[in-house]
Amino acid sequence: MVKKQITRREFVKVVGGGAMVAGAATFGVPTLLRAANKPIKFGQLNTTSGIMASQGVPAMRAAQIAQDFINQSGGIMGRKLVLVQEDDQVKPSVGVRKFRKLVLEDEVEFVFGTNSSGVGLACVPLANEFKKIFISTSMSDKYTGANCSPYVFRIGESTSMASKASAYCMVANAPDVKKWAGINPDYVFGHESWEFFKQGMKDKKHPVQYVKESFSPFGCQDYKPYITALLESKAEGVFTSLWTGDLINFIKQAKPFGFFDKVKVFVNNTTAVATSIGLGNEMLPFWGEARYYPFYRDSELNRKYIGMYQKKFGGYPAADTGAECFAAVLALKLAIEKVGTTDTPKVIAALEGLEFEVPEGKKWIRPEDHSGIDEVVLLGKFHHDPKYPFWVYDPKTYFTVPGKELAMPLDQTGCKMAKP
Image (cartoon, rainbow, N blue to C red):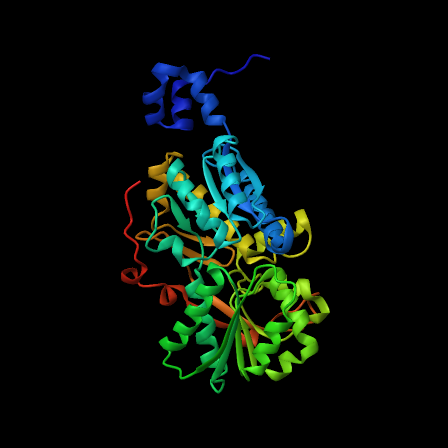
């Protein structure tokens, strides 16, 4: 069979006149065609082993759904998207090593992910060193604070947004609860969460007393001393940012103490249905906040996301980190196609101010600090619904706050964005 020769006009349509002028004289059309057909590689860091696997594995899977979604629609500028996925083991040192591998060995063009802010923040200096865009799917406000970088973005809601929304929800739904305590993980996310929850109470001028604050080590196996101390404090309400396996372990160990009968309200700022799936019949009716909740928004994209996930993996896309990974991949595709190149400074400019639809609604990337801001932040109270094999939010309890209302004012972030 004789292969059809591509014409100059057809080639310009594929790669753009600028690429033709810049490269044809040096490399010739065949070389540039190979470049145009070369896959685009994205690198992903998430945790697929240990206590965070219940969030990390679905995060990897959700990114694969994004990859399929994009490739089935023609790829990115006609090029196939390839993911290179690495387990960061929720260890900053491992995350740094894997980030280097993705850039130096796998030669990815962009990096996204991390479940843990501790891992993600450790990777920020590498993004600066390699001048690679890194889109974090973990929540720390530090990504967009005083150490903000032109190469670093946080794709979704921040710790401050989730924690303040949790406080606003409690003011609205449990106004008589005045004595509060906290049990949070002893690293960046836990400390930030507790401080921002208290700030949320202050924002609403809600008079409360903080009777106990506790910080447990990541991967804590014995929560009994913390549970006892919380009960002895006579707290009426307890806020926590424990999540994934830590939250599941805490709840299982607290139940025999009658903990959830003795405190009036329990609220968590990062509880997706992955927690209720993990707890099964031991689940309880407490308040949770989720960056992604599969049953809140009935949109075409959300139905597509859920359907593709169920077909490929079975079950629901339960992890909110997964939806953020889907969003990170989609944002990169949209930015690349907007400027017609993978050139880093141009993609950065395209990401800044990007507004786009994701399964949970609309997102906007604030250009001044690269903060991802969701249309709304959602909380709900878990209950048993026989339609589902796990506990879900009671729709009558949905509590939403506009993301822009929760976003930290620019003059408070400390961010002074440099040029790439």
